[in-house]
Structure formats: C-alpha cells, structure tokens
Image (cartoon, rainbow, N blue to C red; front, top):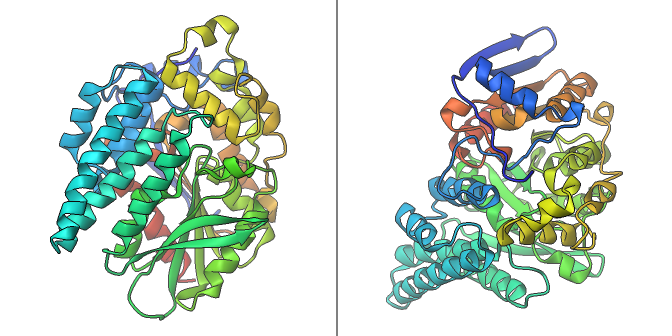
Amino acid sequence: MHGRNLSVVGMMLLCVVFTGAGIGICRAESSKAAAQDNEAHDTETGKLFDAHGTGIRYHFHDTDMDFNFGSLVLGSTVNHGVEIGEAFYTASQIKDGDAASWQEEWYKMAQRAEARGEGSLAAGQRLSARDQLLRAAYYYRFSLLSILPTDPRLEERARKSRNLMQKAGALIDPPLEYFEIPFEGTVLPGFFRKAAPGTRPAKTLIMIGGGETFAEDLFFYIAPQAYDRGYNFMTVDLPGQGILPMEGKIFRPDMYVPMKAVVDYALSRPDVDSARLAAFGYSGGGGFVPQAAMHDPRIKAIAMSSGVVDAYPLFSTMPAVVASPEEVAAWTSFHRNIVKAICWRWGVPMDKPSGLAAANKGFTFDPAGIGVPVLLIVGEGEYQSDEVRRQQQVILEGVANPMKKLVVTPANEGASNHCIMENRSLVSQVLFDWLDEAFKK
C-alpha cells in the first residue's frame, strides 16, 4: 500500500469568494484524470490516502524518501537550508530506499559543510561561516531521518545539529536566539529571532510542527520570510518532537498544556506585542495550535496546514496503520524506520504501527471554541483526501469569527504536498498577507 502517488494533471486554479460569510476559498480544480485519481483514494469509502504522495517524482522511487527529499530538503533551498549542488550530489550517492545509505551520505555532507564553516569562522569570515554552519546544522538534521531511537547516533547527531544552529545563529543579525522553557521536569527547547534590534514590541509568529518535526525544520520553513515581513519568529519542540521522547515526553492529547508554557514565554519578552501574537501549525501542529487557541485567548490569530479537528480518522486510514504483514515485509528499510520512529513519538510499540490510530484518540478540538481569525492552507494533493476536505469544512462551519479562510494551493505551481514544504514562498505570501489583514482589525 505504501508508495501510492497522486497523479495530478491538467490543473486549473479557480478562486471563489463568499464575502457574506467572510470566507475566502482559493480552490484548485482538477481535470477528469485527477478526479478519477481522487476517487481511487477516497478515504470515506475505506480506500487509502497516502499523505506522503507527491504527484511527481523528485529523485527517488521510494515514496517516503522522495517526499522527504523533495519537500523537507529541496523545499528549504529558498531559505538557505541546502545548496542544490550539495543536495543532488548527496542524493546521487544514496541507495534508493536504504536507511543506512541516507543516514551516511547526509552525515558526510554535513561534515564537509561544517569543516568549511569552521575554517571561515577561524579566519574571521563571519558571513561565510554563518552560511556554511547553517547548512551543516540542517544536513546533520537530515541524517537523523530513519535513525531509530535505540541508536545512540540519534541523540548525538541531534545535539550536533542544535549546537551548530546556535553557533550559526549568533552570526545572524539580529541573532537567532536559543531558549529553553522549563516544563514538567525538563525543558522545551526553541529558537527566537527578533523582527528588529532592540525591545520594541513587534507582531510575532509562533510556528509549531507535527509528528516528525525538529525546531530547526521550522526555522528553515518560514523564519526568513517572517523577518522580512516585520514579524518576530519563534519555534519550539513540544512533547513528542525533537528528542523529547527520550525523556518520556511523547505526544499527548492535551497539547494545549505545553502550548500555554510556550505562550507564557513569548509574552514574557518585551519585544513581543501581546495584541499581535499568532500561531501557525503544520501537519500535527494543525491540531495542536487550534486546541491551544481554544484554551488560551492570548493567541490572537491562528493558521493551519491543514486543520486537524480529529486525528483519529486521519490515522485510521494511513497505509502504515492498516498494512498487512506481507505489506510490512515489503517496506524499504527507510520507510520501515520512519514508521517505527513515529510510533516511538506516540508511545506505541515500534513493531505495532496499527496502534497509531488508537494512540490518536482524543487529539481533537472544537471549532466552536475558536474565537480568533482562522486561516487554513492546504496543498491540492492533500486536499484530494475526502477526510482532509471534510475536516476543513467542519472548521469553517464551526468557527464563529467571520474572518476565516481556506486556501488550497495549486499543483501547477508546485504547491501540492502535505505541509506544502516544496513552495514556502507561496505559503508565506498567503500566510503573512492574511495575518497583516487580521492584525489591522
């Protein structure tokens, strides 16, 4: 079942605005071929929808590896997370679908970039050092994909990535600050970059990731665009993310509890404008952020890509959750390890991915409890899932605030995948244009 792609052809962008309801919908309409493919992935009829399907092949035949290469890796190019030459050279050395090969080749490229960066830093070339060390930090993070939590290299490389991110962050102007929020016997680690030097209060975006996220991912997702738009940028690892599961901090249904600690920290800073504090969550963050907004009126606007009203039905139809023993046996080592790592983050035995559905019971929020402006951003490929569409509609119908909008980004602009990581410029345009309007009111 794993490896199904979406065949999306002949796309045409259609924008419909319901001004009376205060809802703007930018919807990508598919050709007959795409509609037929959508029908083949109808979750409501019991058929499967692979959130990691990409619609096109970037380099690898293994679907999971190709999704991560095209979205996580190449998508970060706009924000200087990778160099194209380095990315494709690394990919050329990786055995398709092989976990060990992926881990080793990204590790070797990380070492090369780190050596260049350290050489520049020793020579007093701060800008060169900054660029090389930022990429080195992210290459080490890429090498974490498919490393199992029982492997000591996971923690070793994660800390290496974070340490280099801190070193590079000190070379950015204004600096990228590392912080730790005390929480239930441990800390929630994160990064903050001011919109401008000094302590003048500024509008602020808190970005929250999902089930496979490290805080570094979110810096490379949208932090530079936030800065360009005059926003402070803040991101953090919540329980379940980064390496917090090593301390027993797995995902939990009451994600609004750690989110409250995050908001407490944000509003403790004099450079954060309490009247213009927004939160944006992608993947699982599309459920954590609105749940937090239900319980915390200090959050003044929220965005989701996409919105997750109830995680249980989404997980119940994932190919990895319903796979037969024969299908599991046919998985590549890369995909198998990715699934095991996700199980670990949810507190599920790593050899029992079927347990992920039950583990997601209770990960819900009530749209009627959301009183702030709401933006939903969904890639066209992901929007072909009937369950994804249904949940966005539940949100739009349930939220009372008239400033609510759904934007479906189009495949023919390379903005189709889960989290839309492959076109971050388009996501930034949609998000920040909307937030600017929300904060005018």
